[in-house]
Amino acid sequence: MAGASPSLVLAFDQTRTRAELRAQAPYRESLASLMARFPGGRMVDRLAAQVPIDEFLSGLEELASWPEPATVVWEEDFRIRALGLLQDAERSEQILAGDLEGGQVSPEDVPAILGTGWTADLTEFQRRDIAKLLSLGHGANFSVPGAGKTRVALGVFSALREQRQVDRVLVVSPKSAYEAWVDESQECFGDGFTVQFLGRAGFRAADLLIVNYERLGRSLEILADWLDAGPALMILDEAHRMKLGTAGVYGMACMSLAPLSKARLILTGTPAPNGARDLESLLAFVWPGRGRRVVSQAVEGGNLDYASRVLKPMYTRTTKQELGLPPVSLRVRTVDMPPLHREIYDALLGQFVSARAERSRSDFDSLGRTVLRMIMAATSPALLAQGASRYEPISLQVPPLEVSPDNPLFELLGSLGEYEIPPKYQEALAIVAGNAAQGRKTLVWASFVRSITTLESLLADFSPAVVHGGTPDRQEQIDRFRTDPACQVLISNPATLGEGISLHQVCHDAVYVDRDFQAGRFLQSLDRIHRLGLAPDAETNVTILTARETIDEVVALRLNEKLDFMGRILDDSAVQQLGDPDDEPAAVAGMDSADAEALMLHIAARKA
Image 1 (cartoon, rainbow, N blue to C red):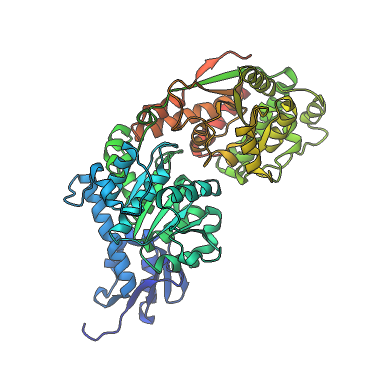
Image 2 (cartoon, helix red, strand yellow):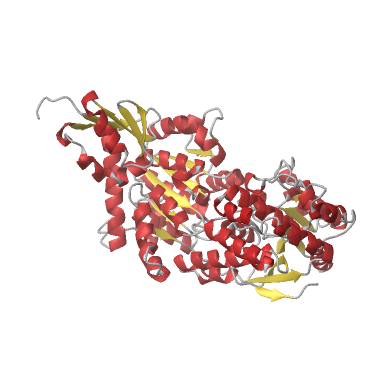
């Protein structure tokens, strides 16, 4: 229909992070009908709607239902971006089918294509990973912590910049990884390469711009402008932080920015800590409009060996076996609760063995508080009355337990001795003392800040360093643990120190006072003392403390299942083995629906 005015215009929204659909008045009902086909879409006024770009591209065929397809007009910039993403999706299909022709990079080619500005050394497996990621165009590096994913990512950027495909790089990372990006950039490019943090003076001219996940959502327009100013590589470091995809704040922000980047790369050693859905979100960022569907189709039959073979062409991974790391000695030390502690635990459990608990089955907030209090009770019942401190991460926030005087718990909690030392704390003390006697430092992990401060007092003879969310001199504490011979123990929680730091040079022993359901966080924290650079004869010992017949056993079971899934999907038996530690005699919390089901079974079993 030559000369007809457009019935529908497709463009970016104002932030350039969503697809905007604007219709003429006669097509208002058609637009509403079209939006019903996009669950994430929304009407923004009578004649305009917006859809997340990933969802828009995934459902592009829905435009065929428009009554006047010949009068649908794409704004030019949006058309170019969308076309590029569709070509990327087609390339992902070729990768899966093994039909890629040309454009393949071999590890031997890598040194020559990095350019003369590259100054860092690369290991054999790093050259291999760079080659594969360049061959993919966009990609994922699921190598274990310590394999040098940061350097590999900078190598990919250097090669793409040399080929004039990109001229800048945006890195989204946790704050704990800032130091690594600054140091590695200096090592790889020298003084002429500018690294800046979002909001600092001169950040718009940076070669490498860093922003943390917490700031990402409120900086979308600034970052969209930065990405639009020149072709850029966008990197998500510790990408498992956006595993919720568009259902989470971090994931929504990352997915919104993905189409604006020329190339996309994700880095994480724990890509599927809770199952296939995590992996769907990650690959949806790498290949908007296609990645999510690839994963769901691969795992829908339940055959993880098949899924592993299907997905393997989409990512690169260096395992701990390839790093030549000596194995970890991972053991569980089970303690018996004193009679009073057992009474308190069972009384707490009894509050949920009721119709109220059944109603809470789908109430994750309520179940989350239940889980945290049960973990507290299995560790030190005194934590129940104190609740979480203001320095806890959001996932561990729980108020003090309020108990009426007529509740059996009231009298039981009042009977706790002020100077009573819970069995887990006694075991931690014994392990730290034994290691110190041998000249070995110990890393003690405890989820709750009040546990950390109690352990700090208990372990005072060993000059402890302490790091949690409220620690003002974090780096000083870490440096003291690394360099002061008198400092024999570092006490922290995985939420604060589980990522972005290396302690393997000085510490080979770790103790977990408690754990929650977050498999990825557990794996990340393990790797603080077990990573590239260990001597071949180094002995790495990890002890997990559990209280018998408590939620600790439920957590262990669920972590085992999650690690087994991740190990099988990544074809890495070492990950599976971490979920099955050896027993050792004694000397939400990241919850998903399966975790909740396991919790309810535990409650039912204790009731019986």
